[in-house]
Length: 123
Image 1 (cartoon, rainbow, N blue to C red):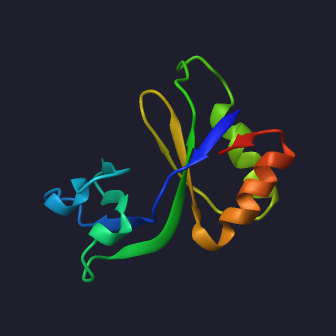
Image 2 (cartoon, rainbow, N blue to C red; image 1 turned 30 degrees about the vertical axis):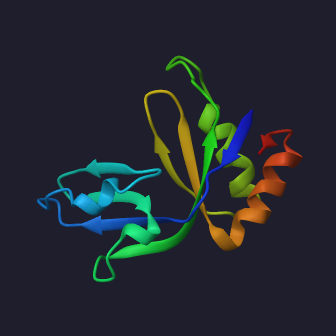
């Protein structure tokens, strides 16, 4: 598996479920928006997030170099399992073509080492 570390820090935000999607979400770079009946979750460039928004800051995104077919089994698990064994918490986001695994910046070096130990290529 080949992964690449995306530039910049990502913030993971929680807004009320009935909130409008704010304009600052799409200011550039990686962004993901998920709405449920319980919340509106947003992952976007940390620098874009206003200070008064509930946000867990300091995430770094690793992109699994896809695309992957929906029928492929275990793609995400092949990355999350070694990270779990190394004690690295993740926030995972999937798109149509691929997956992204976010890890806290202070755990990035450990995450990369754990993935390389499992023969993943991390750029």
